[in-house]
Amino acid sequence: MITITAIARLGRNPETRDVGGGGRTVTKCSVASTTKRGQDEHTTWLNLSIWGKQGETFATFFAKGDLVFITGTLMERAYTSAGEDRKSLDVDVSGWSFAQSKADRQASRPAEDSIPF
Image 1 (tube, one colour):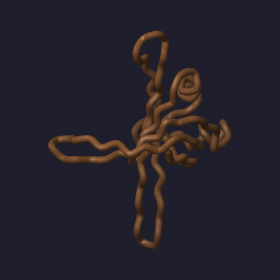
Image 2 (tube, helix red, strand yellow):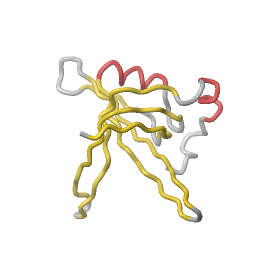
Image 3 (cartoon, rainbow, N blue to C red):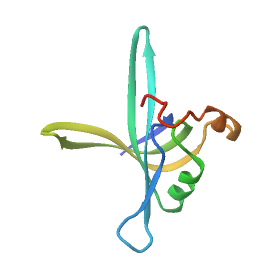
């Protein structure tokens, strides 16, 4: 098991849905963080799953572009898309917190779809 701690920006709005009946929910979203070394720039994407009330609460506070602090278990997932083998990095989130103030979150939220990721 690999535990990860990250500060990153949401690449899309969180979406909450019911799974398996019985009122169990999961909130899904993605975050990105860009590292620059000289002229080189690399963006790492993580797909987040946040379960139950914790995820529902997350979805009420965060939106695309917000900076968030997350902890959880990192997993690599292999899949095929258009006949091509691919991999993604998924995090089963066990905790989250605000990485910026409410005023900063609201001020930094871009117009819809103006973030390049």
